[in-house]
Image 1 (cartoon, rainbow, N blue to C red):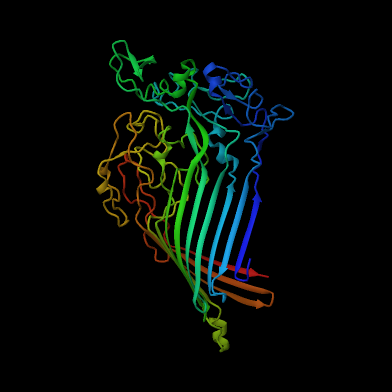
Image 2 (cartoon, one colour):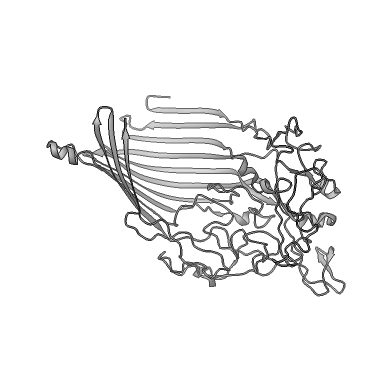
Length: 544
């Protein structure tokens, strides 16, 4: 733009093309139509599938490329997104015109393309391609788990049009026109060379992620309050329910979870056909704001150094998949189907304070031949980092390493005593906070200490969700010091040998790992795991 102002801008067209499932005889893609369920209309492709399910080959199937037959079995997993445009803008201003002070700013919008597995998750193992049956409270116990299950043991099964369908199956349905996730990032930085070779900078970083993935429960159980009347009738919103209980018995129990499911109320005739049922949704958001202060010293007399400090905060809805490779699952649902903000909290990766210091020192080229051969060219490099909220966790799942749950993560509704306290068959339910001023006991992070006070939490009343939020626990600070020693030995002009020795956690210090936050566990809140001890590794590389 001018001799002191540079502007970079552009527009990236980023269509997300559909992935195809080519498996025979029917691709692993599934839709659900609530109106067809209410009317009891079944699939023509799999005639025993639960009402409302649509497969490639069924009229009304939503994906565009629906050629499911022996000659052309493929079907799109989702529809192509053509209108994804990503603007970019960058500014660089030489304030004084001498190259010593600069102001930079940028903005970019970027679409995120997930692998197919992350879009489908539980769907991969569901009927008819796989079989998942969840028996909440087996009548025959573990000795006879299939007693009381319609049709008995459904295994093994074979893929055919008239195959037997499992009762109480877990399902995850596809959404043909799923809004893609995208992020918007912007930054503003001031950089100043305070002396030759030394640069200081102050940066503001901002990011917002739109349309994060989660699973919307379509068939959670509904809590029906009270007890049955003299005729065994229960009432919900002033109307008698279709099912009955023994007179005076509770209207909501683990045993009648299937009776109380959302779809069971809509059409009781098919109440045993669908268990947990989720649909991928992309309604969540996350945002990050951070300030980064840094100091950079360019190599001078064989020594260079970099230091930075970050003060930041990340808030958002949970993501139904993690960066560790976990796919979208039917259990990765919001705690309250009608209020997703109940799960909005600090990100699992939130680190309010983080400090990093790196340095490299190189021995000089000695004039003495012997010293030059033995002592020149050695490089010693070190990294020290300290973080305020424990080790960085890239995941941001429903129940991560900073969330207190009533039972083991992901086990809600499996019949474990006290886990499905709300009696709605939602996984990873959380407790009530009854003493917010005494949540922590010993924050030192030493082995064997108790960080979180179990007495500060309590199981919520039956039929209710706890008031504890997600990601509320601040783990003790953690740190690490790594060191490396290396040198390149020249054999000839075109050949060399590189030696390298590295030490991670050089001091072999104890650094706590994840802490058991299952309120039902006898080890709740205790520091019982650790990050890696000292690790040494050596390498010798011949370059030619």
